[in-house]
Length: 217
Image (tube, rainbow, N blue to C red):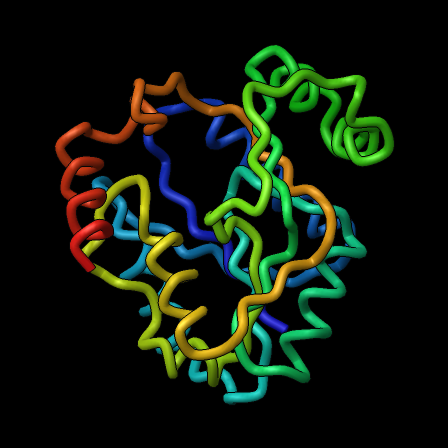
């Protein structure tokens, strides 16, 4: 199993703190991880594709793509990895997406791994900006190297924030049935958002270009 966390410092201290927390979370579970990092504007797709190509992992190995601001319960993560090891296609490790608000994120970051445990044990003790059911996001997902290759990786025409994961999910669903693990994913706050829900740390022109590519494909 290969855990890949895409990350670029967009000037938000919350992003860096969230990334550190997610890495520590997996480190305590003894999960080896690879960070796919790059300069701004961040080309997440190219960075992830190059890392996986350079590693040359066997086709039957499982890749977990985990956003640097998102996590799920360990049992959901394990089930996604197990499913990806035996079945082709993309497994999304959640079926709902809970976006923490800024005060709750700040409290969780101060508490570190203990905060993550509290959130998983009692989410009602935290506040959320929005909750999405059956979301298109693939913030924590698992698939085999073979499936990743069949998909041609992520679309490198997407720059900055947004829509590259929706495109990836849609393309995966055309090859194999899309599967989800029951349970929530939790997203840590890191930026104010525009009316179109994009983070202000990403130039609006890039978001517009990504949306155009996504809706035109």
